[in-house]
Image (spheres, rainbow, N blue to C red):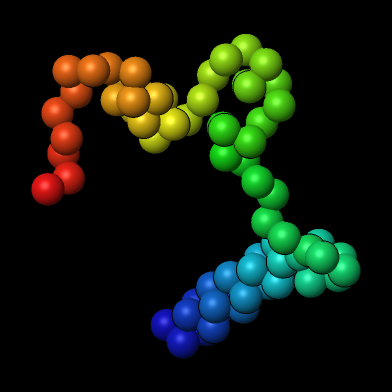
Amino acid sequence: MWKTFLTVALLLLAAVALLSVSILIKKNGRFPNIHVGRNPAMRKRGIGCVESQDAQAQKSNPLAVNERS
C-alpha cells in the first residue's frame, strides 16, 4: 500500500514540476492568458466573454432592471 502511495505521490510531484518549468525559467513567466475577451482573433469576429456581453446588453437596454440595490 505504501509503495503505491509513494509512487503516485512522486508521479504527481514530477508532473507539477514539469508543468511549471516554463513559468519558472522565463524572466516574466506567467500562465498563458486564454480568456476569450483578450484573444485578437475572437475580438475580430466580435465574440466576447459572457460577462462582457451581459454588461453590454444591460447598458444598451433602457428597460434593464438594476440588479444591485
